[in-house]
Length: 67
Image (cartoon, rainbow, N blue to C red; front, side, top):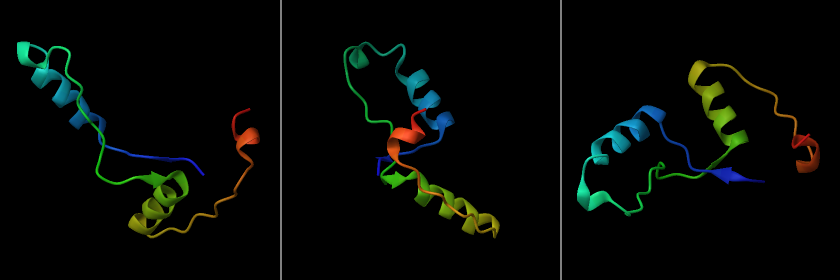
């Protein structure tokens, strides 16, 4: 199962704006993801728990999910 590191898009946009005019930032690489790595199923469970709802997760073969 694939996992990803997630972050708020507003934080990424703010980071980009903050370095646009910095000569020292030219050519640099910045890690702009959150500290945790989560699967989509973990995020769905977290969101459901946060709002007090249970979601039934149906696992599909990766090939079917790419259609």
